Amino acid sequence: MILTDYYCFERLASKAKLRMDCIASTGGYDELEMRRASRAYRATEKRDAINVGGLIIYYGDVPDQFGGNVHEKASKCLTIKGNNLSSIYVPNVESGYAFGDFRGTNDALLFAFSDMSTPNGTIAPGSRVEIFIARGQRDNALMLYNMASEGDADLQQEMADLRARARKEGGNGEE
Image 1 (cartoon, rainbow, N blue to C red):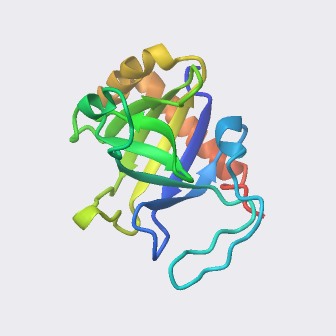
Image 2: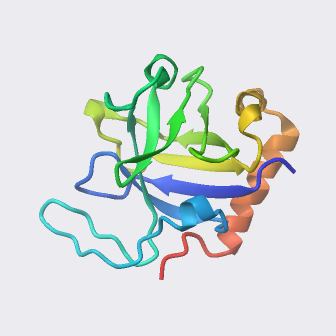
Image 3: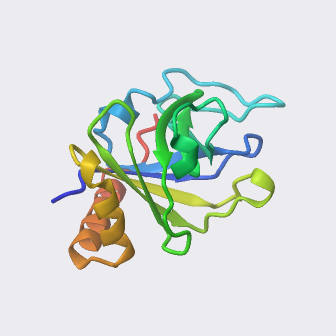
């Protein structure tokens, strides 16, 4: 088994243009679990609510302040509270997949998109991104992308198994 963890995010927010909320996960991936909300935030005129245990990410273009040559390769990035977690590489927009690695780890990320659209720079309601984590496989991220894009049966089965495990384990871990 290559894939170890799974997180599914959906655009539920009504105010934040790039926010996506975790709606299902297998849990257990400390790099994301430690970023869950430790206290609740009420909705305000300018901010969406966050429940205790909620996990949110922001999916958007690579900001200008990100240094290095990331702009030459990555088109999107994943952030939490302004911190870059992963650059997202999309070799073929028609494949529905992308890849990256989790900053500061040796873990590869495989992204699968469902109904994802960003008209006028805002993620459309109902857009989803699934993140499959392959611990220790950072150097094989492109290979995982290629396997997913080509419909590798074993990898597709692993993805289906992780989705089912997330449903069985109760979703997003919110209290």
